[in-house]
Length: 345
Image 1 (spheres, rainbow, N blue to C red):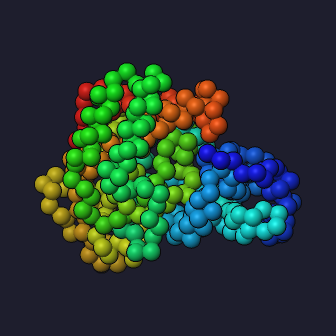
Image 2: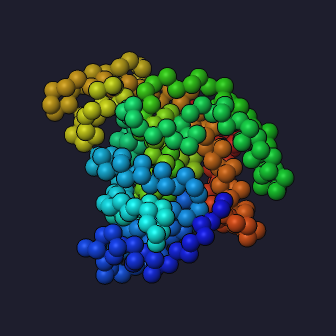
């Protein structure tokens, strides 16, 4: 991870806001968080400024977020940071930047979920609303939401590194979860909208349950299994509750319909499609998509992300650049959930 040469300061943020959005000048500026791609600075009590600082592709991700998230946010049942203004590159700061709404809460890597059943229902409702067929122009993403086999080399390298560092007790069990996921049938449905970065540091909690989702920079279209993997990273003993509550509507007409106001029916046990009608009278086809193959792929993505979190956490413990100590424990917890014997399908 290469950090930018430009020093990020409250003075810089104030100057950028004053130069390009003077109606927001004068608000108190203070550091919110340093993320993987961006730094987050509070702008008053209700806004935040996101500045790319650590990765070169963060510029494109911010522009994607600005273009797509406002249209998605209105139908989501959890608060999310909604882009309000786009800052353009300038002599003062040569990269785009973003002003969004501020979402209160504590990141789940520092304040984990303790009310698992409640959080499972909230996560399922969030992904049910988000996972709608995406239009043809939706971002493709950074190798997320595609075939797991494309990440086989990276997974093998991560497993080797984690084992050599003493982070893995049973590498064969870890590999078995991954191999089973790669062998599962590929996603045959429409590419759906994905958050594509739904890990504990990007999920906010309050009173032991979910209260918000942040950082939509990786928003893209793909296999819903990638987002579903978050259940193993976030939920203590409530993955089955999550899978039972997750019920997206994946008919093609959903691309053009707003998320809000749609009728939701229970997923049929028989596996047959159920035809319902929205308030407008328009037919909607509710297809049962939580099948064995989807869960197997989600478990594989969860294992890959658990390994990544453990390695990044270990880097943080060792004081290495890019390391985040708080990422290790959620990765370890997810690995335990995935390998402890029971395989939820």
